[in-house]
Length: 442
Ligand SMILES: Cc1cc2nc3c(=O)[nH]c(=O)nc-3n(C[C@H](O)[C@H](O)[C@H](O)COP(=O)(O)OP(=O)(O)OC[C@H]3O[C@@H](n4cnc5c(N)ncnc54)[C@H](O)[C@@H]3O)c2cc1C
Image 1 (cartoon, rainbow, N blue to C red):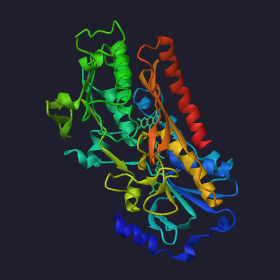
Image 2 (image 1 turned 180 degrees about the vertical axis):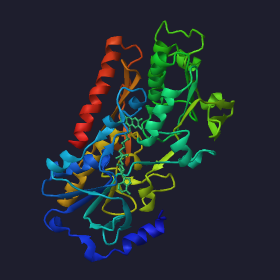
Image 3 (image 1 turned 90 degrees about the vertical axis):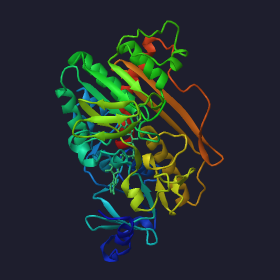
Image 4 (image 1 turned 180 degrees about the horizontal axis):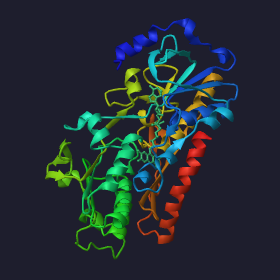
């Protein structure tokens, strides 16, 4: 593992002879993108669409992207692990994006070069960085990357942990408890842990009818909390806390009977304090909670690369000029997606995709000597309370006093929406997965 100093040295010690020639740089420039996830892939595609003369190179560790969005559906068998795989072939063949499959390990901002583990040195005119998140396993005493790989998976960056969690759910004893430890703000995909809880509860009704899902939360609320809880109530007999009950449509009443899904908020003692990986026990203020399957979604920060490049601030994320997402630390370096500080915009794929488009426009404008235009961003997060029960939060954002600010308006699926609208929202969620992937990668 390189520390930040070694990392910068690795960049500074670059042999120029090894540098990839920035051939087209004089004419149109070479844009290098680190990370071929949602943010990086979208930026690559739209840079080529906005200015086909640009040379665009993506440096990405993996030859195939495993999409995080929609990955909770693997747990319930709605899709398989392979269905999460997304190919880079169309970005190469249709748009002429170049790919280097390697990991960036060095950065020299003065020479405008990055260096990879495979000892390639790549020069850029503008650098886009979209490395996603790093999971702070060590933030919960008793938890670690090793525990996550073997005993209590997170599955928040999809891969082997998603597969392990799926196996554990399927093998859970009848009547067992599937515990989800939810993360503190800010984190990737705000409705995600609660959608996962819903899908697992729905799965259990068929495959483990006496099983239970328990969410332990360091927070007291989450985005879409009212609509999600109404869905849990209707589908699984969830008992809605009194402070939410007063806003619910007429006729919504708790049965008081035990429900297969329970959400324990911080105010009710749900915040996790530590865990014992051997016994799968989580310590909370409320006491010890024993799990049969333990899914811990730990606190998050920007991807490790952002720290190594010195792009983060004390928050653990990357400060940027909000108009263009150019780093506040290094010129000609742009940070987008989950790693960036984007104020009211959530850490979602939809946001990363929107930021990539706005940033691609700003880069093309900068390179042409024009000022970037006035940005507008959007986000819609769809989520499922059950496979036919959809909901959403939708926002439009503009710059106000240098910060990204949400415009006022109806954000959520209304609590009194008809069942037809609710089913439609579930259909939109499935359609979005497909059209969104196409927008980013094809
Ligand atoms: C369960 C779940 C459900 C979700 N559902 C939704 C949803 O419904 N809607 C939605 O909008 N969002 C959803 N998301 C969130 C969404 O997936 C992320 O917000 C999005 O992927 C962020 O994009 P990104 O480009 O910042 O990071 P990523 O997509 O994670 O891409 C980062 C890439 O950088 C690469 N990389 C990192 N470091 C290096 C390096 N040193 N060198 C080379 N490559 C590197 C990684 O390999 C990776 O491919 C969900 C997430 C989860 C976990």
